[in-house]
Length: 235
Figure 1 (tube, helix red, strand yellow):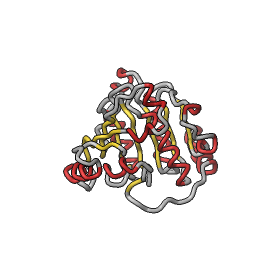
Figure 2: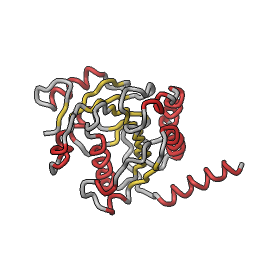
Figure 3: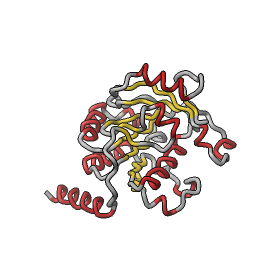
Figure 4: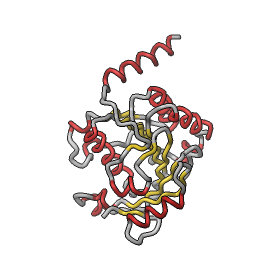
């Protein structure tokens, strides 16, 4: 009973601390990145898990987090970042400033198992339109210990909430993900020093179990990427 009371108190504290305006009732949460939203037919699907696979060490996943945080500030909602390896660097946020960081709940974890528990709590809470679970830097042996039943439990939780759940991984591992996207970048230090490096982000839709078919997504990618089939890059 004592533990249950602490969970209720934490939920009430989150609701009070992160009050926000109601977002329009749409099926997708816009990322604010036109090339990403076009490739996914609208952005990140609500009520579903999206897995973003970043197989290369410098593929741009951190830059994407900063871009999503900027969009959250612009559209006046809060996002939760569950940091599986305590690797997020607020000082490297591309000049976002403290005002934009106010839109962030940063959950600092040391292990993947802690991140899964945090995701379970926040998806039950339902106060955040976007919950990001960053497992890119967690050790492979940690990730292998996460049972597939955990991912399906999180999928059931997010289905009941107006929330988009984005899981960042190093390799394909989330069996319940409704949408799987692969980052196709291999950036250097020079790339990160560019003023608008996010504009060079390249993504590939690997799998979609959403209402729109994979073939339709591929066609949209071809149109928006100017003869670069099934691959999108911001212009």
